[in-house]
Amino acid sequence: VIGGIAARLGTPAYLVGGCVRDLLQNRPAPDLDLAIEGDVRALAESPPLQQPHAQCQLHPRFGTATLRYPDGFRLDFARCRIEHYPAPATLPEVRPGDIHSDLARRDFTINAMAVDLNPTTFGELLDPHGGRADLRQGLLRVLHAGSFLDDPTRILRGLRFAVRFQFRLEKGTRALLREALAQDILARLSGARLWRELQYLLELSDLPIALERLGAWRLWPLLRPEPADMESLLVRIRRGHQEIDWFRRHCPDETLFDAAVWLTILWRDIPWTEAEKRLHYWPVAGGHRILRDLRLLPDMPGALTRADRPSAAGRLWERLSLPGLLALCAEYPETDIMVESGHQHLRRQRWLSSPLNGKELQALGLTPGPRLGEVLERLRNARLDGEIKDKETARQWLIG
Ligand code: ATP
Image (cartoon, rainbow, N blue to C red):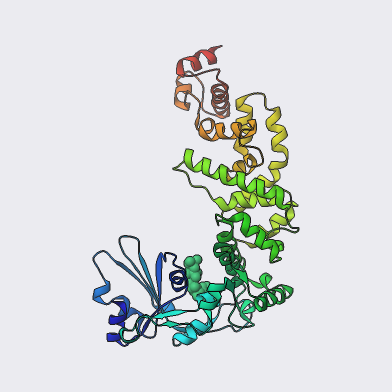
C-alpha cells in the first residue's frame, strides 16, 4: 500500500534498517522504518495511511514523521539523507540524499540494507555493503574506516547487537575498534549520549553476556577503573535479577530504575570517587542517591546485624534508596536473613505509620512542635516492634 501511494506521489519509499535485518533473520520486526526519497509529510499524511485513530506526528526540522496505530504498531518515516561529520564524535551535518547515500551513513552492514516498496520493483533487496552475507555469518562490519570515530555510539550499539544476536566483530572492524579506543574516542562523546547507550546495555536481559563482551572489547574503563571479578559479579547479577523480579511481583504499582540497581552492584567495590567522576558526567536520574547509597553500603551489613529490634533495622533500611536496598539484598543468598529483613521492610514495615496521628495526639493534650514529632516517631517504632497494634493500645502505651 505504502509503495503504491509513494509511487503516485513521486516519493520512492524503502523499508530500511533494523526491520530489514530482522525480517531476513525471520525475527518479528515490531516497528517499520521507511526511508523516503521525497516529501515525507505528503506520504505520512496521505488519506489511505490515516486510518481512524491513527496518530501522525511530524518533525519537519528532521524530515521525519511517525504514524502510530491503535494496536501499538508504528511506522517511522524519514527523508533519505547524506550525513557529514564535521569533527569526530560530534553530531552530523545533514542534507537530503537518495537511498544509496542513506544506506551509506549507517552503522553496520547488517543495518544498511533496504527493501524497495515501489510497485514495479517491489520486494527487491538493496544490499550495497554486503549486509546479507554478514548476517548469514554473524558478523558486525562497519561501512568505512572512520565509522567509530565519526560516531562512537556505534561501538556500544555494536556491543548490543553482538549480545542480542550473538554476532562477533569482523576482523577489520575489530582493528578499527582498537584504533578508535586507542584515541580514547569515547571520552569525546557527550555524557548524555554515552549514558543513553550504557543504559540500553545495562537493561539488556543478557547483562552477564553484555559485561563479558564489554571486557572482551576492552571497554571496562567506561564503567569501572579495573575489570570486575566476573565470578562474583555474575552471582550478584543473577541475584540482582531475582531481587528486581521479586520487587515487581510484590510492589507492582511502584516504579524502579533498574539501571540504578546495576550501577550500585557494579560500583560497590570501586573507590567512591570513581563512581562520582562518572555520575558527574552522565545525566543519570537519581545519581546523587546512588552516590549516597555507595557511601552507606559498607557499614550497612554490620549495622543491620547489630539492630536488635525491627524498628532499628527499619531506620537503617530507610536510609537506602530502593535500588540501593535491592543491590544490598543481591549480595546475599535468597534465603539469607538479611534478604528477609529487606523484603519485610519493603512489603510491610515502610508503610506502617504511627497508630495515632498528629490531630489525635493533640486531642490527648500534646501541643504541636518537635515533641509531638518525637512522640509520633516513638509510636511508630513501638508499632514496628509489635508493642502496640491499634489506637487503643497506643493510648494505653502513651499513658504508661
Ligand atoms: P532495534 O531493533 O534495537 O531498534 P535498530 O537497528 O532498528 O535496532 P534503531 O536505533 O532503531 O536500531 O536504528 C534504526 C537504524 O538506524 C539502524 O538499523 C541503523 O541503520 C541506523 N542507525 C541508528 N543509529 C545509528 C548510528 N549511530 N549510526 C549509524 N546508523 C545508525
